[in-house]
Length: 210
Ligand code: SAH
Image 1 (cartoon, protein in one colour):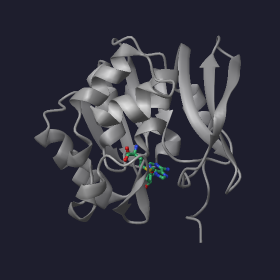
Image 2 (cartoon, helix red, strand yellow; image 1 turned 90 degrees about the horizontal axis):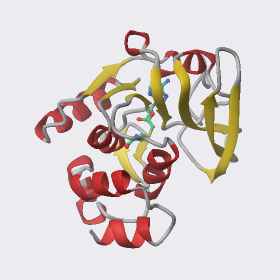
Image 3 (cartoon, protein in one colour; image 1 turned 90 degrees about the vertical axis):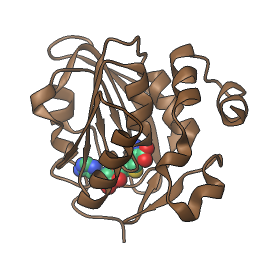
């Protein structure tokens, strides 16, 4: 609750659905044992395989920017620890979350099952290609940074749907909300500067950062 108050409410997170989700989902269930003392730090944490669990505020900002009401079918790209997927799952109807690293997908699946997050489904695949079986999505959250918005993800967005993703070059990325206006039109809004691990895949970067 201190995290919700100090890191979220005292900044600009006011969406009651987002705040309720953060109050319900224990972040300590998604970090490694060695990181337990840091589970509520105002920071990302290592989760193995060179990846991180995002800073709580960044997950909250993304969820709030998606303007969720509860009925949505959501796609998340970059499951990582599974924490953001659990948060989204506490708000919406269903979450399809895609992770490219098998070990992380496996651990996240186990954790989400242990917490009873039955409406979150983890898939091990290249998430730059989305998850076609569940498309179109009213909301898409991308948790890794692409050189540009992947065209396949834009195509899997429902009309009126929102996608929040970081993109840009290696060290300067913008978090952007893209809203699909109609079959061919998309609006783009800048939400601020961020730093994410790279989105590696067919419509992302060709390889990890060295
Ligand atoms: N939402 C996560 C944050 C994970 S960091 C959490 O709450 O913990 C981003 C994740 O994106 C990493 O686990 C990385 O392996 C994954 N990733 C990178 N490129 C990907 C791709 N093309 N498809 C799916 N996952 C990808």
